[in-house]
Image (tube, rainbow, N blue to C red; front, side, top):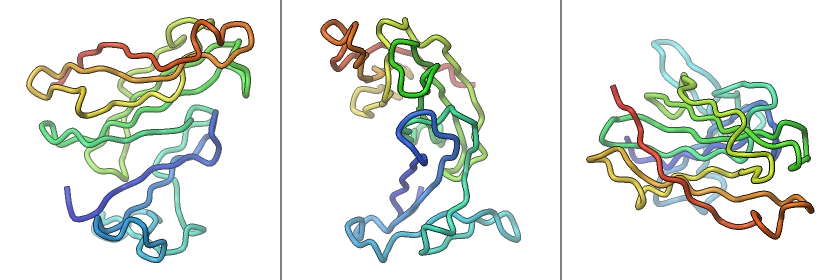
Length: 173
């Protein structure tokens, strides 16, 4: 979209509630002082930024439903896809998980929930950390592979604690 690289983060690894956004010029990713954090929408609908992380405002708030998020830009539809997940019970893989997918025109939102899968597969599998490797996505067909991890539960880890993939197709209108 522009000369920046954008990054999203939640306030905890599972069942967080707030998604924050940072940006940095592409050539300065490793320089902490070059990073800026979204603080809100200002006059004229323009995003505002601060170099102080403490000033960061959430771009999405959803109580207990934001865990280890990933956001990718789909150039062919000019949209940002946000993938995240949540556990049915904090820190408990035996209870199962949910998959949450959002879309937005800009990295600061507003985000629209377009897919909410509950349960996400089965409680035995308890998938987590959804990722969309863009090399595994075909913009011509809107088909690709969703990458995720599987249950770390003591009961099921020998079967499901591994990298898993699942084929999908986006409906674009």
